[in-house]
Amino acid sequence: MNAERLPPSWLLPQEPVQAPRSTATDPFIPLVDGSQTSCECGLLRGIVEGTAAPVVILDRHLRHLYVNPAWTRVTGVPAAGFIGRTLGEVLPDVQVPDDVLIEVLADGQPREVTLTGTTRIPSPVGRRLWRAVFHRLEAQGHVVGVCGIGVEVSNLRQYVDDLESAHQRLALLDAATTRVGTTLDVKVTCAELADFLAPSLADVAGVAVVEEEFFGEPPPPPGILRLRKMKLSGPPEVLRRLRELGGPEPYADFPRNSAPRRCIDSGRPWLGNLASDETLQKVIVHSERVGLFRAAGVHSVLIVPLPTAGRCVGIAMLMRAGASPPFSEDDVLTAQGVAARAAVSIDSAHRYSREHTMALELQRALLSEPDGSHPTVEVATRYLPSGRSALVGGDWYDSVALPDSRTLLVMGDVMGHGFQAAVAMSQYRSVLRTVAAAGLPVDAMLTEADRRAARIGLDRAATCLLVLVDPEAGTCTATTAGHLPPLVIRPNGSTGLMHLPAGPPIGTELGAYEMTTFAFEPGSVLLLYTDGLVEQRGVDIDDSVRALTELGLSADDPLEHLLDTLLTELTSGICDDDIALLAARLRRSPR
Figure (cartoon, helix red, strand yellow):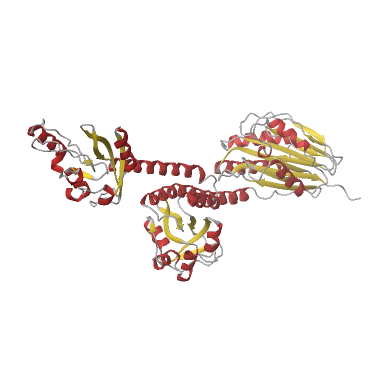
């Protein structure tokens, strides 16, 4: 009797049976012997057929001898459809490692196997997964097949996959936090976003921001949204084909029915997977440019808004091309998360740019050109705002022409930053101009300025340096209220600091200022500056000030060139603090 022709009920009989003799072609020994009672066999059958775990019995050729009801319910195939056939013949979309089952038959060691695939019964998780243990079956010393008992773990696998996707999404968002928004520059931030999205989430990524000020360009027609193109990132060969995607202008205009406009108006992403030409036209409006998508191999487009509180500052457009898969729901969620974080940085950079522009305009208004000096004194000034703050500072300079050909040079620095510091700076400047008109000595000027600042209630102290240049006497008289010493560059090439007795900042009502007079011959240059020029992290400021004497500055250079040299040598274009400079030279008398 051949086992594969036996009905399943023979393997679990309800009545005792005699073991048939083996044949020469396929020896088979029954799994039960005649000593079993019908009660025992019925109990065994009830357990196997009542369990929710799939149970299968295969012969030595891995063909089905028996399947329990649980397996038929899972697969959607009746028991008769399995008998005498392998799993691959019945369910070709389910993968099973036959080589492992052959090893079980060979050495009798139970082994775990994984079955994965799809069955005739659809599953919400798509591809299903089972874990099963297979044991070798023997009867009277003969190997008759294997028995497998399994459990479906599709939901657990789906949970693990979802968890892994969530971890990957969080890792991507964390990476975006460190790589996008490293500066307060809108253009740089948009470029960082585009460069991050491609290739992290797309083959090509573009970023555009809502244009609110048109700066000489014609405004868009009514009802049209204008986006300024900031950055397109991706492989060079693809970018060459997409260069004219939005047209030659630095901006693109979108009507209400366009995908970018709908994305911004609704605050929701727009997805076009495996998009048709008609769908792609909604992205770029102009039908003649759809060919650019096709030439670049783009098949799917995802547009996500850049949302902030109450408005969208722009969009990020992600494109996949060639063999890349379409965007998944997880891709959409991840792109939204990255865009939301980047939008905060872009909005901050926008506000910084506006505030910084306003601050500079205010600073220029408050820090107008000095009143002037006598023709015998040449004066040049520079003001370099901090590159790390949108707030104005309290640095100021001034030169005031006094009677008898004398010129008063002023350099000051109000403590702190912000509009209050700028207002205090303006008040200190006005006080010193008023005091200078009284014709007092420079030490008395500081004392009076200190007294008046306290009287008008200025709550911020300021360092200040006054230098009175007297061409007729060939001298300069200086006094300091806690300010850095001026630098003197002489025609003979020598350079040195004008060391002055220290005095307290003005605005403290401490008074007690001293003045010192130095020789100041024609052709000599005086340099007054604020601490932003010489402050360096980790370097003692006294050492930085002394380093000024080693720069090799020449008194014969034009003052504008001299100031440019100072800024080039001591700064990298962006400074941590505002810098104010004033250079004055005593002109030589014509021969």
